Length: 170
Length: 170
DNA sequence: AATCCATAATTGCAAATTCATGTATTACTG
DNA sequence: CAGTAATACATGAATTTGCAATTATGGATT
Image (cartoon, rainbow over all chains, first blue to last red; front, side, top):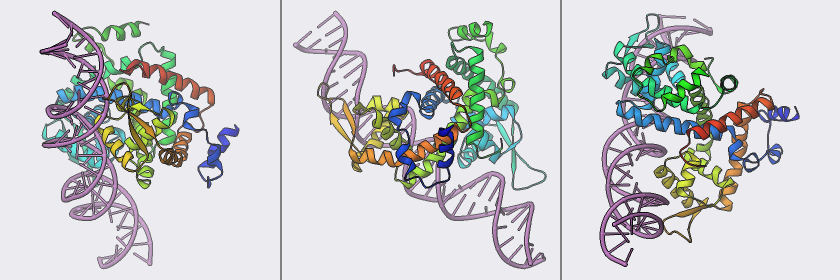
């Protein structure tokens, strides 16, 4: 409780005094530092996917856009950038490539001509379907030997963390 | 149980039959797909750190190397690349920069002249200490409102996942 | 409705990243 | 122990990325 209050204060105070009391990384230990572990895990996950993606002519941003669109079609570019975890400028170029390959199309928004709504094409869906088994396999590998209940608790915590760190309401 | 067995088989079988039975991403839901959530969370975490790092003349790879070295001094370049989650070639150049700034030094390994062992300098430690409060603040924000017990369980699951996905024994 | 500000998306450009390769050294194998 | 393979790290070249600026449109204020 003390701890949480202190962290709460940290966000809004000058910290020259408080800093001295922060636990050091060495005290926490790399193997107990959640951001470190998550970076290591996702670094591997993404790197191993990248090899497979390259074989299919895809990049990480292209694949992420396709993945999100397979679930949420017709998003705007900026929404898609948030969901895909890709910089908007990078996404814009990834979309150029996807359009050129016929996997997505840009449609004008009827109400606001600044925005374009992105739709997957049939070919785009097919491309993602071809990719999905690889992703599912990596996913299965990650959670191998971890019981269903633990998985559920883990995902629930991830959802809380995302709510804490995200800037957008989705 | 059935589920786990099936996933287990997936790793070692031809999957043209099995693929048809895979749950689709849309069925799982983006908000329940752990790799997606982790990418979103770390994307934000890393992006927000990057802004602060830039102000201090650091990049993500440089910061990661310093962070790891603050805990594990004297690693080889390739070990450091794994711990830091940075490509070896990228790390090599990040180390050039850190050496030029006097934050780390490369020392010859007495037993094997191919390897160089990387050590933080006092200035390097100081640089990391100056950075740590920012990292600790992001960390605190991530887990804000999440009770200690839940945090521990979360980290324990992360450790299992890392064991599942890592290629090296550390 | 003229002006000013906010937002959407793209693009120019410098810097960072990757893949492949190079060089040096060590380990293995017949 | 010669010859070949493997490993460690660095680097060249091309691609990719991210930031800032740009263009275009919409909203708000007077």
